Amino acid sequence: MAGKIKNCPNCGKLYAEIGRKMCPDCYDKELEKEGDVIAYVREHKGAKIPEIVKETGANETMIKRLIREGRFEQVGIKMTYPCEKCGEPIITGKLCQNCQEKIRNDLQATQSKAVAAKQMAKAAAPKPQSKGKGMYSLKNR
Ligand SMILES: [Zn+2]
Ligand SMILES: [Zn+2]
Image (tube, rainbow, N blue to C red):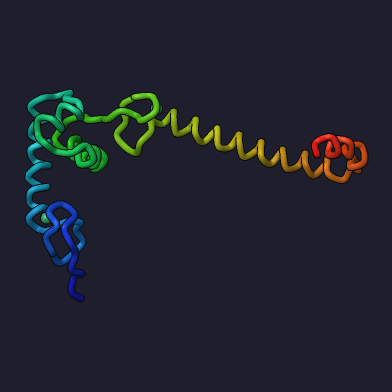
């Protein structure tokens, strides 16, 4: 089966998609850029992402992908990027372990609260209380 013909998201050129998100030209350029980024970080240990973006012209998404893929570790460089919540250095995902756990706990807390509220509502429902509240709706008319 031949690849689908698509527009390259980078340059708009038509190309046959063969498991790549861009045309061969842009793919080559991307590879070259990756090489630039890695070379830059090798020469400037501890370089931060904004600096790398500025110096190499690579975009942040690509750099983060390289970090996730362990491309810097392959050449003996420990690269991280900040957690989106607290700024802790991380190498994968968007949040650090702590923030992930916190979110998970919060989620569980709200879920169990919701369950508790439901149970309370259920328990409260059978009580016939409608009579006493009649005056309220009258006043509000
Ligand atoms: Zn292209
Ligand atoms: Zn965090």
